[in-house]
Length: 107
Image (cartoon, rainbow, N blue to C red; front, side, top):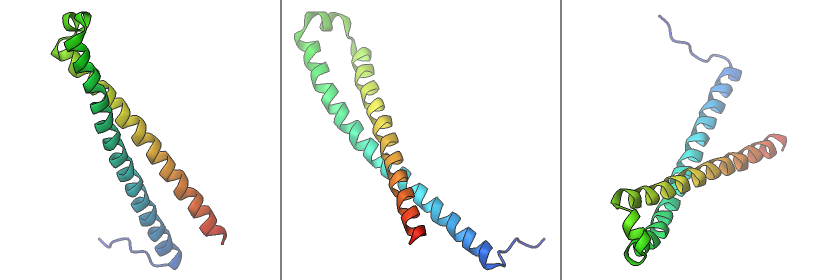
């Protein structure tokens, strides 16, 4: 069986455009992952310190927050920070790139 080979310049241009869009999407998602990971690290530290301090100092927290509850509090905040920041970063990057394409196409 013969492969489908792009013969016309229009088809080659379309494939190049598709490859460009795919590369841009990968770059946007990679930026989101990096930003989300940074936010998760900061959120973990910012949550772990007061959680551990409250368990040591407050009688209610000492009696009611076992190790599992402490881990759940910290990981919930870290996960939420990751997804919120990653989503906002991907959307901002995609928006910035889409505006760049519009201005490039008009010029």
